[in-house]
Length: 555
Image (cartoon, rainbow, N blue to C red):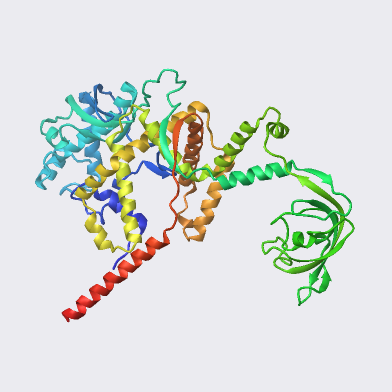
């Protein structure tokens, strides 16, 4: 079975939706131009200057035009082309065609009279083909200056004649005026809906909701405990008092590697593993296993032999997980008192804090850390609300282009999952694409609006992406491409644009989150139900046994 590359497959898929008569696996790549890119939380469209087809200005007289707005960010333009322009377009087509056409009695590239070329083409079934091409050329020369210069609009997509060029060619006469009526999509201007009373800016106060797990109480309790521990007070213990859990002491420690029996002393440990006047707080999980346990009940002046095991994740790999023996002499002993959370304690942490405000601030800090894993859910809520703030009609050209890209990506994923190319080809029909486009359209329109809005907000609020952040991402992506053997396909210029767009969108969403009115619905995450899984497995096994029994009886 013949295999095609992902790029070729995507290109063919895109082309197949252009015409019901196109062969998706043999079409020319010159007929497709994609004008948008994907990024981050969806599609990020390129700036308007990079959208649309390339058009050129006419040489000679310019036609004047009138314009009518149509739904869907489309316009109908009526251009009155003067005779000089129609003759120039006709002559240009004749000159270009003469370079390639073969006509008996004329050498290739020679100047051939237009009527001779027309007769030759008519003999081959191309009546009026020359004049139709002249109309198409005239259209391409006049439409862009008409929209840009006369109406200050940016055309996108392919302009379409209201009356086909072949039909107009019936009455087309070079050198005579002609009126062309053209439909074309144009880049929409950003329009915000009316600002609500008391709302500072149209993108402030976005409303929406998203779900996330409740704040982690365990993390909060640990954070509060660590804070209280930091403000613990020490009081010297009476002479002869024994160290208990929670007390503190200062000790001299001399360490040795443990012998094969785990208790005898071997080689001395490095100085870094021993020390004088070492402060030890007696509490579970604070130090290497065995140290605290070996000091419980000791008094000032005692020397204890303590048997310990170094943590397996110790940075010094020569000691990680190894057993050791310490001679520990207690120099000082103190009772530690951990303060309760009161207004007085809060004021010691920071002037002006109360127990209540301290609790709120700490809860907010812990929750902010937890909320990072729900940024995508938050941004989805912001995007939906932001799109609602815009009063913009999305051109069908952009919807079609984005749907085409998504459709192609879906097909390449089918291929990656093992579907044969012949089966994929059967799915690539204009009818299937139209169905897919209808399904994808709402999401494409929303993401286009969000893209327009985030670009505008970034400009208004001065939100820029630091160059160092972009470079860091580019470096990471390049390394990843090299590992996957795709470094030759790595186009840094294209990738850089996508990275900048993605990072800027994230920064804009972070800004919007600060000024939004989002409701957070806290939902307990469902745990793994072992009983349910066992029940389902048992039912599946019973079904298989029943089927096997039925098959055996049939035999």
